[in-house]
Every structure is written in structure tokens, then in C-alpha cells.
Picture 1 (cartoon, one colour):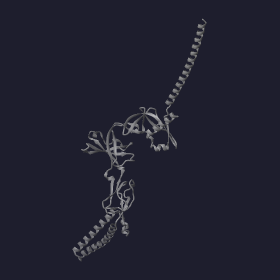
Picture 2 (spheres, one colour):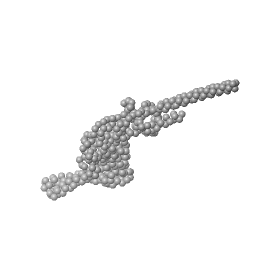
Picture 3 (tube, one colour):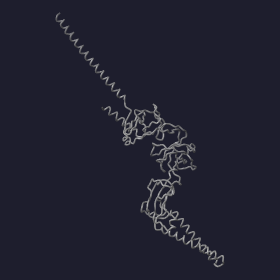
Picture 4 (cartoon, one colour):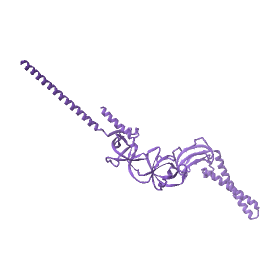
Length: 404
């Protein structure tokens, strides 16, 4: 009996000890679980607090070629898609050449220079120029003699002293001398020789080559010391003020094009800028090869960056819908959502940009309608070029924060 009681006491003590250890482990496990849960919750809070602000120095903006501009209002209504190129009427293009050959003494312009009508752009020298001026002076002096002789013969013929044949010969010589002088004088004038200086005995050994129109020097085909033959082309000059669009509208769409319709267009090599034009003439000839009609449109406003011969992609607006739009390059996509960057603050050293979510609407000509989820200031500035690099900088900053 004593042994049984003793065994019972030992069992009770063992069970009590086991319960104490179990409770201690349970409490410890609960504390660990709570700590882990707390850490996980804190981590989630950190992950949810992802920064949407990025700060870049002005030098970074320049190196990454990031452009910041206001949001544009663009007509993205119903359009007729056409292609074409920039053209100039023939009266606004000039090929400059010399009437008489000569060696190039000087060139006064370089390609891209603006010149006025009549401006000296080069000088040619040739001994023949001096001989031509000498001939002019000789003919001018001889004409005076021939005129006096003719007038004297008229008086003598009236008095019956000279023959009719002699009078006729004097008249023919005078008229021929006068004709030769006029021809030589006109040649010197075409060569831009100052006749007043020649009349005073100041002969020139070189002649001026002048621009026949105002415009820009497009091409130069000469250099100092080069001999230029008559009629050889030396310069090409174009007047871009009359630059216009020559668009090819296909046969099935020609009834949709009308004089006065507005056009938006971009260069095929530069799709991030939209230009405006207006149709002023519809072609009357049908081109069988392309099955199209040429439509002409004058450019409205900005001509910067436009040159004759450039190819364009255009839209003839058949209905109007003005909307806020940005170049496609201004948008970045993250987890299936669209974002843009707006300028929040800028000083002499840094620019602070904010990434905001937006929705994209209709797209055309490299631009897309932008629909704001939250309103922004009307004068807000947006990253229109280089948004991909700004987003990379933002993500790099988030990665570095996670590393720490």
C-alpha cells in the first residue's frame, strides 16, 4: 500500500512538471508568432508606402535628354490618313549660275545662311570682264561720233550737198553703233557691273554673283580658286516661307477632302511634334500610277525643322475633337497601369517629379489622349520625353531603400 501511494505521488509530480514545460513552450511560441506577425505587418506597411517622388539634378535631366513641357490640346477627331512630302513652288527655288565663266575669287556665304534678294554671295574674276568694259567705253565714245556724223549728213542732204546713199550709210552706222552699245551695256548690267564707275574710268576685274531671291542657301558647289564655266550651277537657294504640303489622297477618299479643312501632320523622322496646315487647293489631275490626287495645304504657324523634300504623315480632320494629349513617350506602364511624371518643384539645382496614374484614350500620330484620375493644375508641366529613364531612376531609389 505504501508502495502504491509512493508511485502515485511520483506520477502526479511528473505530470505537473510536464504541464509547466508545455505551458512555457506555448507562451514562447505565441510570443514568437506575435513577433513574426508584427514584423510581417510592418514590412507590408513599408511595401505599401512606395514613394512616387523622384528628385533629379538639372545635369541628369540634360544627360538623359529629358524634356518637360505643358500638356498640349490636339484635335484627335475623325481623320483621313494620308502621306506626302514638303514642297516649294518653282518661283521660290533658285539655282544660281554665271553667264560668263570665271575663277572664283571669293564666297560670301555658307550652307544654311539666310540671304536677301540682290545680296552678293560670290565674286568671279576673268580678264574678259575688263575687255567687255573696254568695249562698252569704246562703243559709247564711237556712238557719239556716229550720232554727230549722222546729224551732219541730214543737214547736208537737206541742202543737197551730200547724196542720199551717204545719208543712209551714216544712219545705218549710227543705229548699229547704238544697238551694239545697248547690248554691251545690258550684258554688263546682267553681270552686276556698276556702270557709273566704268563711265568714270574705274574698271573692275571681278564681277558679283547675287542671289535672285531671298531665302536660305541650301547647296554650294564652288570654292575659292575653282573655275566656273558659263551656266554652271553654283548655289541652290530656297525660300521656305512658301513651304507647303503635297499630299496624296487616294481615289476612294478624294470626295472627303475639301478646301479649308484643317490638317495635323508629323515628320516621319520626328513623330514627337505635331504641325498644323490647311488645304488651299485640290489637284485636278489624276495620277494613274498611284491612283491618287494631289492635295496642297499651307502650313500654319511653326516652320522650325521643316525642309523641302521631307516626308510627312498627315491627318485630314473630317470632324473635330480637341483633347488633352501627350506624346506616347510620356507614358510609362507599370503592372498594367499607365503613369506620367509631372514637375512638382524646380530650383537652380534640382527638379522634383511626381509619378501619377492616368488613363490613355484615343491615339494617333504618336500622341495619346490623357485622362486624369485626379485633377492637376492647368499649368502643370509634364515629362514628354525620357519618362522611361525617370521611372528607372525612381525604381532604382526604391531598390536601394529595400537593400538598406
